[in-house]
Amino acid sequence: MIIVHHLEESRSQRVLWLLEELGLDFEVKRYARNAQTRLAPPELKSIHPLGKSPVIERDGEVFAESAAIIEYFADTEDAGQLAVAAGDPARFDYLYWLHFAEGSAMLPLLLKLYVGMLGENGAPLMQMRVEPEIDNHFSFINTHLEGRDYFAADRFTAADIQMSFVLDAGASRGGLERYPNLVRVRKLQQARPAYQRALEKGGPYKMGQ
Ligand SMILES: N[C@@H](CCC(=O)N[C@@H](CS)C(=O)NCC(=O)O)C(=O)O
Image (cartoon, rainbow, N blue to C red; front, top):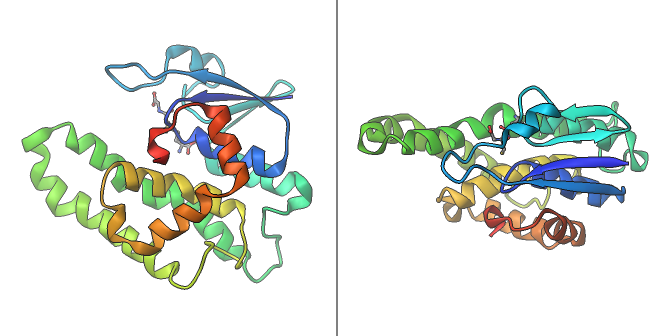
């Protein structure tokens, strides 16, 4: 049995979605964020030393880091239907978007959150580097999605699931509406039955609005 240690309003939502798309049985243990710091509760450190989410367990084995979890389960479950196999011409594009999410796109979005905490003191950094870098990434994604409903291989893959949190973070931190293809693809993602089932299992997810 798979146990998902699910932190509210987090990247873990996309792991619930993945497991629903794969049709796997799983149990969800929900964790609330600290109301002041928004950090995860300390008990998550008893599952994995970093104390972050997503982290999942299966038969005593622990899996952390969302791109690694998603790539691993997409490869090994459901006959790899959500993956793009080695040797397929779309394989690199698939891996690119699977890793672009955490490797590139999330950094300026996280900086927006943290630099925003500095208020006026952070305003120059926000204007000179953070906002332009978000625009750089989102414009690039918007161009890539022109005429496409999926990130890679002209079909729904695990890369779409991994990229979904980037779109959610963009929506919740403001500005996504300036990129019509991101808005359009996000709506298509949210309409999937497995996405909706994952929402029911994870509990309230304001970032998905
Ligand atoms: N790159 C990691 C990031 C994990 C991460 O930072 N998760 C956040 C939730 S979105 C978290 O656990 N934050 C709470 C904390 O740091 O205490 C991944 O994609 O799995």
